Length: 309
Image 1 (spheres, helix red, strand yellow):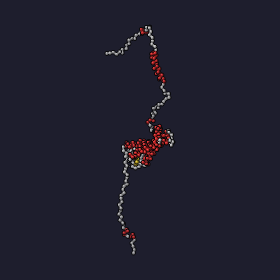
Image 2 (spheres, helix red, strand yellow):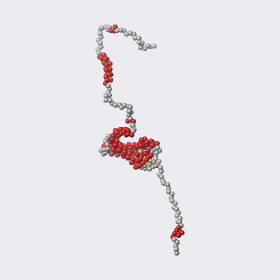
Image 3 (cartoon, helix red, strand yellow):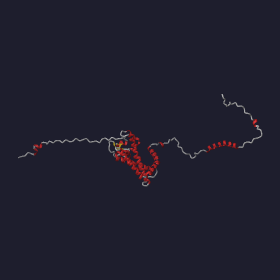
Image 4 (spheres, one colour):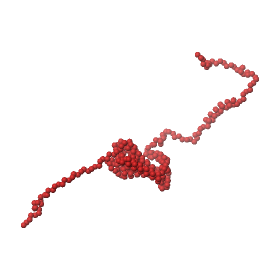
């Protein structure tokens, strides 16, 4: 007896109904809410940015220069002598160190010492950490921003961004934890001051740097301005104005005193001789000169005696 093949089974060819399992609809990706930067009072905000720049550049450079001055006095380093060249070397090294410290802190933590003290933070325009590349663009364009372009853009743009912020895609706004950041920044600054007082020469090194800045700073500033083509007000002297100079033969002429003294002595000498001369003795002879002298004629001049009307 022949059996039908397996494929000829009618039950095998019928499809088995499969109930589809409903799949959950894929939810749209969640996007982080847009971060709205806070600036607060705009004039105070701009003053805070300026003060933060002064702390990050001037104050930190001064502390580094005090450490370098103390190291030179103790003989640890011998970069240059105590002349204008040595001051230029010390100023360049200190300024470079201050800028590198600010760049490193802003890249890693989003804030510098000055920005932390005044409650400021650097982040992306859309929110998030700025990163090394964006901060590097900010610092590359900082010299251009210092030529009055940066403050002007920060004043008129909606997010108060300077040229470096536009190119780097960053914004400087108020920190989320403003008071806490200020306390932390002040604590770090106090630690730096203590370290300079204990290990960096203290007041003596600070005074030494100040004296060198007062001695060589104006001349160096004038030379830098001359290289940049800027004429300082105090350095401009009109070409038509003669420069006064001291003549070695300039002395008061003695002829003036000699011409005045004889006049005084000649007028006073006869009076003195007349007072010292003896009085003439009375004579018994009659005075004939008085009788022979002509009498004065009446004068035609009007009388000067006032008349009483």
